[in-house]
Image (cartoon, rainbow over all chains, first blue to last red; front, side, top):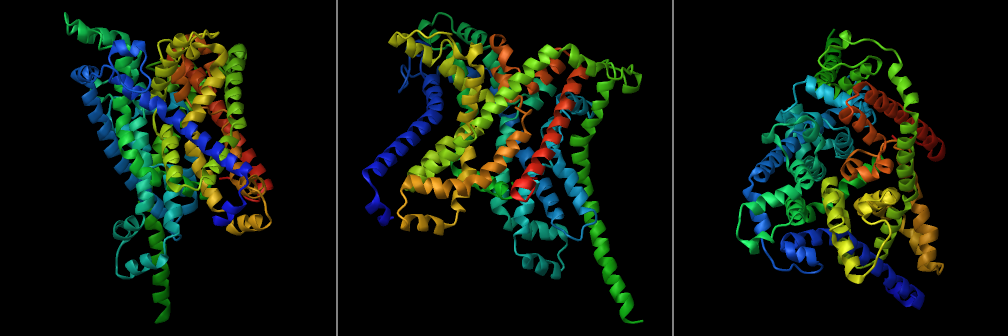
Length: 299
Length: 309
């Protein structure tokens, strides 16, 4: 470190400054849109039309108030949460247990079974075949549509299998000597030892579930099964009417009337959609990195 | 008499366990078959005239008539292919960016600053394209921040609203993709940099190499294997741009340039309701992609001595 310092020429010092400057700029570009939407959503409609750049102006939470008063977003939040929790746990259990089975060398037909599962990463039947098959299974307008198709996921299986294979074999052997069966070994030995990779996969899976929209958009018409992403999509297509219908609910109050604008409504809903990810994200960041690195090993 | 049965018994035990594991894997295998392989049977609809509410066996067999549509629609197909390839090639040209970003990050020795930058730049990867669309419209739509600022500063720009500008679609979508993926893709290169032999850096230092020389002669060559893998994988995905981004950013004024293959499959299938033709296109797309993957795998075997997947 110090050796580098002694040698650093003015040219290198300049380079370092430019580098830090560029990194700051990229960081700003990545974060400002989020920041802008947050400050925009708590500024009044008039202020928005006039321009809000660095700080919110004429702060009002009225837009949020009205958005939540409409009711469906609260319910959509619950549906999304339900699919995140159940989808993630089912996917974790199925994928990790299957990956564990795939590490068993004595398994009959192991290679072919593994190949069949891994090939799904590259063989896509396409949109319409997927649509028709789900309909055939009766998953249209069914909550299981959110859970079953992703239960056994090739990519997570690769990650998990790679991880289990580098665990010390002695742990498993001693468990087997103590008479533990495969389920017991999996539950009490393998799972606890695989915590880092389980956490990584859980985070991937949860984010994927939270952001998923295609299943909902193409196959769910039942408003009780609507997820947050789709509400966002629907709102953004009809923000104009939405804002006016919200305004009409408070006739005669011209101050509040201008508080709600279509842009403001869209911003508020965007913030509501992103907040869960923003809240958990910084804490889980190290797991993200770990997962992609392990994937790279396999690459 | 004594030894033999015991040994046989043990062998059998091992074999039985082998079958037991196979049995245990069957429920999962069935799930995979049901959700990834059964849909392939719908490819049969490519050879019939699809009619809603009928069984496959009742639909008239039309042979390759649906494939002949490809020729009749060749202008459309050519346009969609042009868009697909344009987006893919632009993305391939930009593949060094995450690598450069990772090297830049690696050069900052302040760990906290680096972590902060990394956290902030990976965030866009974890939001849906709907949210990206909302952020983009808040900034660029006709009543967004950018036109507002331009208006205040008296700047008049040709072409108006970026999101509705047909000439800028490709570059705009490319930039959005980079914005979303840059930080995330850099992680893989950071891991690769950490894996470069420390002695090489030391040797460069002893030889009196400058920072830039070290990067050029040690870091970049050290990252090349990773770069090649990612590049080849991207080539294999030439036809797969994904639906999300193009679905979300589609609007009539940019339809000419934004309709990529994945969007076209959606349009023909869901909007036009021509299931058979949509299946034909999707099917060809998958088949070509698999062939590409095998080709790229072969190239990788020749170049690096090992396959990609």
